[in-house]
Length: 284
Ligand code: AMP
Figure (cartoon, rainbow, N blue to C red):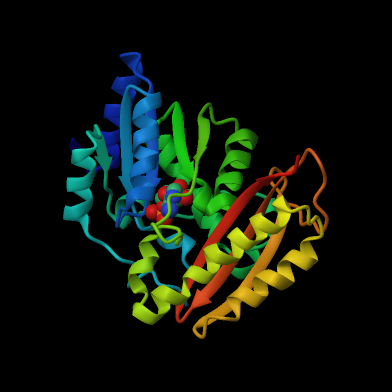
């Protein structure tokens, strides 16, 4: 695996790969890698000739009050893990390489970015779509994989890719979980032992929702009340939102209809750590 730090060099490499007729797969990350990230890498390797992974903790998607400075980092470990997966290129630019002095151009997606994560974290998606556009332009992938863990982000990227006519196939890969159900996240490292136990209420409440839907419940308000009951069992949990949305448009729903698919999404602070999780459901 070759580590590339300069934008200019990455441009040259991806340009040449395209001239050589190679299909480039791309997995953007913020590092501190876990099995969730590696599942995306494996998907990219299955579906392309050359896989590029980027590690860049993107400052423009963090609010001043958020955890940019303490976001976990371990480049050596990440490099080793990606080597083991036989990744071809690791793009690892410095902040100033991506955002030189005077940078002032942003990419903003409409409606879908205004709800849920967009409401709780204003400007977050503007930072995400800006960095992903920049990385798409540098890496020039044919194919790029995102995780359902960040379901709204994945939909925002799909919308941006379609609206801006990026000629890139976007794939969304399922959530990878710890054995006890907690969705893997780089931020889980912030949790102390008590919080780690409490964090299970996210996945537990989603499993409860799944069970109720399987048993025929179609009223999301009924389901939500029961989910809140699960969350309230954890002392350190502070609920941000629980919401059901149509899986394509992300418009909010209260009643599930036959033949449609939905996300049930949850965002919850466990102590000082904000965690998100979701469930994709198909109503038959
Ligand atoms: P991040 O490093 O948090 O920016 O995540 C990079 C990519 O990995 C995003 O597309 C995430 O949705 C995806 N990802 C993060 N956690 C998981 C997980 N537990 N399962 C699957 N994909 C994940």
